[in-house]
Amino acid sequence: MNQLIYDIAVWLDDSAWSTAIHESYYLYNWIEATHVLTLMLSLGILFIIDMRMMGWVMPNVPATRLAERLNTPMLIGFVVMFITGLLLFYSVPVRTSQSLWFRIKMVLLVVCAVNAYLFHKRMTESMSTWDNEPKAPSRLRKGALISLISWTVIVICGRFIAYDWYDCEYDQSELVRIIAGCVDGQTRF
Amino acid sequence: MNTNRASMLGPYPRTAISVILLALVIAFSFSGLRNGTWVNLLSFFEWMETTPFGLIGKTWGGAFAVVEAFHLVALGVLGGAVIFSDGRLLGLFSSLSLRSVVDGAHKVFNWALITIVATGIFMVCGVAVKVYYLPVFWYKMLLLAVGTLFALYIRKPIVDRAPEDVSPAVLKLTAVASIMIWFTVAAAGRWIGFS
Image 1 (cartoon, rainbow over the protein chains, first blue to last red):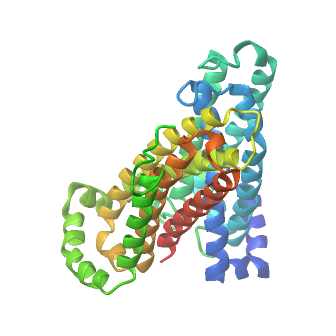
Image 2 (cartoon, rainbow over the protein chains, first blue to last red):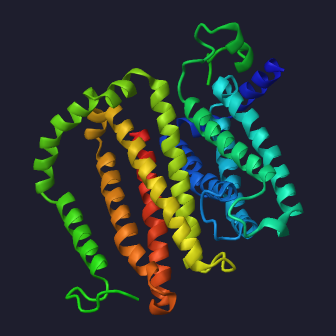
C-alpha cells in the first residue's frame, strides 16, 4: 500500500504543474494563504455552530435554524479549503504522503466527516423538540465536542506538517516509520 | 437610544474619537516619528526573547507550533463571528434576529481576539528580533490596531443603535468595511510566515 502511495506521489511529482506550483514563490504562497484564510469561513463558522450546540454562545438564537443558515457559507469554505489542500499536496506529494502528521490529519478528516454526517442526521431527526433550548441534547453535544477537538487537532497536525522532526529521511523509530509509511525518505519532493 | 446628543462630537462621540485616534496612528506610522520610536524599541524586542515565553518558543519548536495552531483556530473563530455578524447586517441569515446574532457574535469575537492577542504575544517572544526587522509585522500590528478600534469604537456604537435609527446603507457599509479589515489583518498575519 505504501509503495503504491509512493508511486502515485512520484508520478504526481514528475508532472510539470507540480514543479511549477512548488517553485513559484507567489503561487504556492497564495494557495497556502487561501487554505489558511478559508479557516475563517469553514472552521470559524463550524465552531460557532458547535459552540452553540454546547450552549456556550448565542443561547437565544434557535440552534437548528442557526446551523441551517450557516451551512452554505461553511460548505463553500470547506470546498475552497479542499481544493487548495489538494493543490498543496500536489505541489509537494512525495514528502507530504510520507508525513506522519499528514496521515494523522487525513484519518481525523475522515472521523470529522463521519461525525458531521451523524450529527446532521441526529439534528434533523430531533429538530423540533429542543431548538430554543440553550443547550442541544446530550447526543448532539457529544458530536459537537468531538468536532471541536478533532478540528483543533487537525489544525495542529496541519501546522506540524511544515516541521521535519519525524521526516523519513532521519533515523526514526519503527512505529513512526510504519505510520508515516516511509518508502524512500525525502530524496525527492 | 441613549447617546449623548449634546456632545460637541455629535451623536457618535466614541466613533469620532476613534476616527481621530485612527488618523493619528496612521499618521504616526507613515511619518518620521516612527523611525525614532522603532530604533528605541529594539531593546524591548531583545528583552522579549529573554522572557520565559521567548525561551520556551525558541527552545521547543513543538510548543511554538501548538500555540500557533491555537492562534489559527482563534483567527478562524474570529473570522466566523465577523462573517456571521456582518453577513446578518448585509441581509443574509435574515430569519435570525439581528440583535441576537450581532450581540452573540460580538462576545465570540471578543474571546477570539483575546486568544489571538495572548497567543500572538507568546509567538512574538519566540522570534522577537526577527519580526522586529520585518515590515509586514509592523503592517500587521497597525492593521490589528485599526481593526480593534474599528470593531469596538466604530462598528459597535453603530450596530448598538436601534436598526431604525441607522441608515441601512451605513449598516451595510460598516459590514463590508469590517469584513475587509479583518480579512486584511489575517492576510498580513499569514504573510509574516512567508517573509
